[in-house]
Image (cartoon, rainbow, N blue to C red; front, side, top):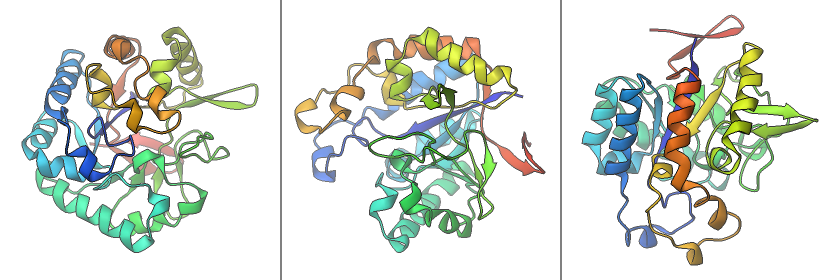
Length: 276
């Protein structure tokens, strides 16, 4: 069975902490980067699950329809790219419900998957899981088993598992080295770590017969998007731009080295298996 490839479809500025007013000053650059990504996936015969931000789908509905027509799965990334743990349960429910209302007509089928912006379902926001279940979500990919200043539950399982509320949870790939979970499943970690090290870590996971869940943002294939470090706080001003010039070549190499597919998973006994 293939490993799982996921795409977080958002604009380059959505994870930078800019206000909505600041965001409107810039071109989102989504269409050309997504088209380039779709071309790579088509050339390599790879399908993926796209966790689409509701506001992006609202502004670019034809792009989402194209993704679905190309055989990729559409899932929810919420609507407005807000931290889950900074919302009330009611506000979170409204945000996810709004995203589903936008996405389902474009996908042509019910939306079953969700990933929180910033992987922000943490110990303080586990209340979000039953909210997702009540909205018809059957799997989540928001709990990252590492410690990060924005997210993470370091002690969470590192392989797909069923939560207490009955959702299938799909953690991003990590490998445990000398007692530490090393993130090797995409994002800034993919651009910062040497590719050879990433591949070695992923091969270790694969050799045990375990599932790799990998993620990428389309903007990571766009090294020429605006540089606005003066408006960004903390380590994000470094990690966001690190290695963008080599990300596309690395990603193409990854698709040659490993076999990936979309989530399209169902829970069957104690195993996650592909359906459909």
